[in-house]
Image (cartoon, rainbow, N blue to C red; front, side, top):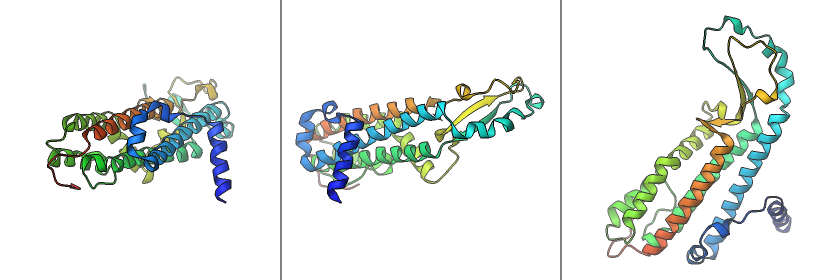
Length: 253
């Protein structure tokens, strides 16, 4: 069984080539140890595979949406003439596959943050094993127990910046998805129509891709990947450079 699983991983690697190690400073991988490097490497590689699968699913479905023809008649019969001016009706085509993939993507992203925080323990003289409370626990430790840490201020600024730009949003999205809140745009293709729609000019080319806020889902995925890799690299570099908090006691605040 183990060999079968390993063979499948090798096949997946050949289908979706990725070189995350080349994007992270080699000195970091050596310093965090073989076991941690392997885990982080696999996680980053798996996240890349998920990203490609989401991108492929979007490209395939936008040109061949199974539910389109089934609902085409009903959509054309909508009485849009009675809609008030500027009133928009959004017609949604949900995609379960994308929903599953984006949930896995969000879970994997936060998992990488957890692992990265855990790896930094030996350099920050801490006991936290995850990026709990969206990184606030790491911030608390740095602020309260590492006042003499070489890169304390840089680490605090780094975490605060990334939390504001994307980390907090990813954790919120992960929680929303896992609790099945209203996130239809996140894994749905859609089209907006108004009272001027003639009921005819409607085809797959009119469909908009799944979106997160104002971002296309594909753009969001690329943005998270880029920011995650930047954060992990800089966070580990600063943590390793700090080694241990001098004259401070071990804490898990």
